Image (cartoon, rainbow, N blue to C red; front, side, top):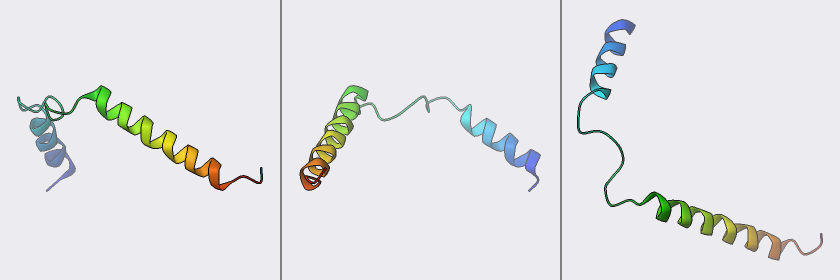
Length: 53
């Protein structure tokens, strides 16, 4: 398989209808809010263990 054939098959695969995005049940706000909560929790835990500064 040449590079041109591989690129052409990947472009045709990406152009198929029905693959517009993520899963319908995943809310971007819920995902982002959950990630923000986890990062803030990790920051809080890190600052609790680093009391000498």
